[in-house]
Amino acid sequence: MAHTTLKPDYIFESSWEVCNKVGGIYTVLSSRAKTLQSAMSDKLIFVGPDFGQDKPNPLFCEDKKLWKSWVETARKEGLDVRVGRWNIPGKPCVVLVAFQKYFELRNQLYANLWEYAKVNSLHGYGDYDEANMFSYAAGLVVESFYNNVLKGTYSNIVYQAHEWMTCLGAMYIQQHVPEIATIFTTHATTIGRSIAGNDKPLYDYLWAYNGTQMSQELNVEAKHSIERETAHRVDCFSTVSEVTAHECEELLDKKCDAILPNGFEADFVPKAAEFNRKRKEAREMILRVANCLTGYTFPEDTLIIGTSGRYEFRNKGIDVFIEAMNRLGRDKNLKKQVLALVEVPAWVGEPREDLVERLCSPDTFDTPLPCPIITHWLHDMTHDNVTSMLKYSDMWNRAEDMVKIIFIPCYLDGNDGVMNNNYYDIIIGKDLSVYPSYYEPWGYTPLESIAFHVPCVTTSLSGFGMWANGVKGGNSTLMDGVAVIRRTDYNYSEVADRIKDTVSTFSALSDSEVKEVRKKAKKLSDKALWKHFIRYYFDAYDIALKNRDKRMAAMATGK
Image (cartoon, rainbow, N blue to C red; front, side):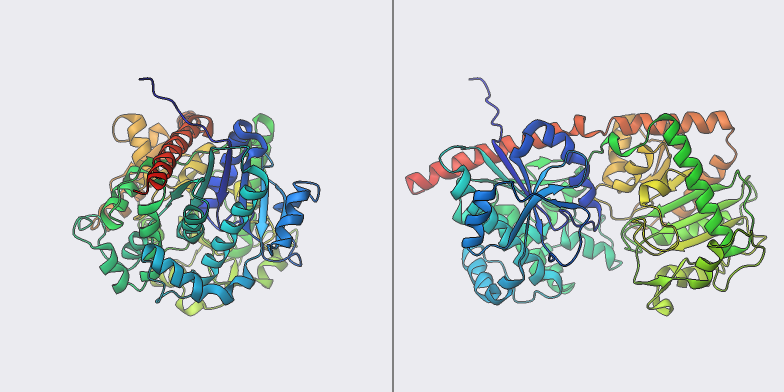
C-alpha cells in the first residue's frame, strides 16, 4: 500500500518570540517564515504575546482589514487580539494576544493541568506564570479561529508550540480542540540547560540522571514537569538536533518523533557590492569604537574576532573564549593584532558618556578611557562574570597587548547608543567567530556567521558542530570554513588551547587562503538554507496529522 503524505491546510505556530526579539527562537521563526509562507501563503499564522498598544513594536504591522469578522467575534468572546503582519521577509500573518487578565485564573488552570496531565505547577516562579498565561491565551485564539473560521471547511490543521513557554496551550488544544494536530518543539530542555548551567557534568552522566529528580534539586520542577508531560502527549514531539534528541530521551523519557534542524534564509545577507560596502563600514565602525575606548590605533589588517549569544557564561563557552584570548596574547606565533568582541546582552545600564563623547569627536585618541574593556555601564559591575574574568586575567587592553578584548553588553538592535548597528551589520565586519559552547542544542550564531562569509570555531557538543562534521564526513577544520573542536565535560583547558592555536594559525594565512576559507564557509551555509531544511517540517506535519487521526479514531471507539 502506497504511503500517503498528509499536508496541513493551516498551520498555527505559537512562541513567546513572535514579534518579540529575545533569542535564537526568534531567528528560527523569522528566518524560516518566508520559505514556509511561500508554501502555505496566508494559511500560516503565528501567535505571539501582545505587551500593549502603548508600546510601539516595529516588528508588527497591524492590518485592521485582515479577518475583520473573526476579530470582532473573538473580541466578543473576550479575547484581546490584534492581527496583522510580522515585519520580516515573507510578511506572514500574525495574531498578537494580550494575556495579563488571565492571571486571576491561574490557580484554576494549574488545577486543570494537574487533573489532565499531572503537571506539577506548585513550585512555579518567575516567568512560569507569565509564559503559561500567554500560552493559554494562544490556545484560546486558535480554538476561536478554528470554531469560527475553519471548522467544517478544513480538516488538516496543525498547531506547533515552541519551548516550554507554550506547552499549556498545546495541551489545551489537544484537550478542547482534538481535531487539531499538535507539535511540541523543544529547542533546549529546561533540565538539560540547568544541569549544564550549574557546573554539573551533563554528557558523561546523562544516562544516569533522573530528569524529575534533578529538576527538584535545581529548582526548575514546574518547567520540567510541563515540558515532560507535553512531550508525552502531543501528536509529534520534536527537537532541533541529534545531541538534544538524546538529551530528551534520557531526561524527558520520551524519544523524539522528528528532528527539525535550524536553517537560515539567504535574504538576510547582502549581495556583491553592497556586501563589500557593509563589511568595510562595519570594520571601520568597530575599530573606531575600539580606538575611542582603548586609545590604541588599530592597523587595517587587525584580526576582528568575536563571540556572541545568550549570557550563559559556561554553557555558551564565554569563559573558555576569554581564557583562549588570554593565552593567545602570549602566543609568539600570532602574526596580527587581534581585537576580540564579547557581544552578550547583560544587565546593561547605559552607554558610557565618556565613550559617546569621544565617538562624536573627529579626533583619533592615544589615551585609554578608565575601564577600557566595556562599552556600556552595567547595573552590577562588581558581580559580572565577563568583567570579573577580564580583571582576574589582567586583560586591560594596554597598548602593548597583541590581543585586546571589548565587552559589548547590550542587544545589538541598532539603538544601543554606542555601536548603533544591528547584529548582522556588525558580524559582517569580522574575520573569525568563536562559539566554544558546552551546551548548545543547535547553534544559530555559527550558522549566521558562515552565512556572512565569516569562518567560525565551534564544538562537537553543539548541534551545528555535529551537522558540520556530518557534512564533511569527518572532523571539520578551519580550512573547511568551520573548525569543530572536540569538547567534553572535562577538557576546558584543551579547548582553550585549541581555540588559541586556531586563531594563531588563521592570523598567518595569506590573503588568498583567507579568501578560500571564507568561500568555503559561505558554501557550507548554503547547505543549511531553509529551502533544504523545510522538508523536515513537512515530515513532522505528516507525523502529527497521522497520529491525530489515530487519536481521534481511538476517541470515537472509546479506547
